[in-house]
Amino acid sequence: MQARGIGISLNAELVNGDLEALERHLGYIDAAGCDFAELIMHGLDVVIGGRVHPKRLEKVREVLDKYELRYTMHLPYELNLLSYTKGAEYYAAFEAGIDLSAAIGADMIVYHSSYAELTDQNLVQHYYPQYGQLKREELFKQLLEEDAAKLRKLGVMAQEAGISIGIENNIWYDMKNDYTYGIQPQTVIQHIRRIGLDNVGMTLDVGHCYLTSIAYGYDFQEAIQAALPYVKHLHIHDNFGNLYDAKAYMSNLPYGYGDLHLPVGWGSIPYEDVMEWLAPYQGIVNMEIEFRLHPHFKDSVEDMKRMLAGK
Image 1 (cartoon, one colour):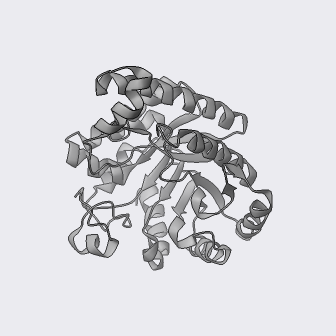
Image 2: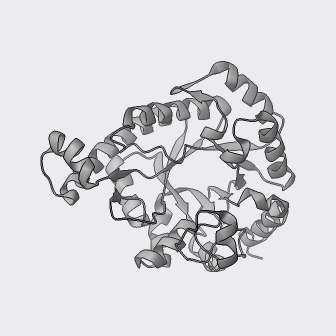
């Protein structure tokens, strides 16, 4: 694999707007030998009220410029263009994320895939008055077209700034009321085709794919190979394929529960096979490792370099 470089993601909650924490944590990533760091927008306190705050941006850039790292940008985890209550605010924040990425030279934005909360109450109070009494599946098809239109407009804005958007395959623990295209890579691909822009592709999260392939019964290898032509960004981390969440990391870790974000080789994902399946990929390999494990970052980067070199 001829990757552009190796990155590690920051942890938004640990940075939490603290510039000293931002500098310290970027230092861990830099010292590990990374080429990139993935910033989490809501941990920086730069986007305020749907706009980039210029004075705050200046302070953050002073920290970023201390390192030779290049940057990618992850939008807020809860940002959801299909939200019926906060859709306008989320859209404005997405636009601001594009502005922020352009300002710091990040050419890749990660967006968690959209979802519609089609509970009985929401259907009666919000959706039926606007769309009529459609069945959930028919309503969701219409909402997908609206979501694609929004992402198309945002994609054009990003394209003008030289930025790509990678829609990430996500995980869901309860699918009773949430309707999403984000669980399976093939449905993310279908949505990317609806959008129809060259700079809007997929952020393939291998850890999420492994968890959901087991939980929802689709073929892990087939999904990765189907995604490959559309993958613009890669999220790498390990787990044990057990889609259960005890709500606290130290309660999940002893039992191998959930989305653990372990270094490669610490879980059960067959990464040697995965790297063979992804051999043609030429983008950034971004490792999303639980930040409490930062003492293992350097080893993880060295292991990934060997893996990418086929050693």
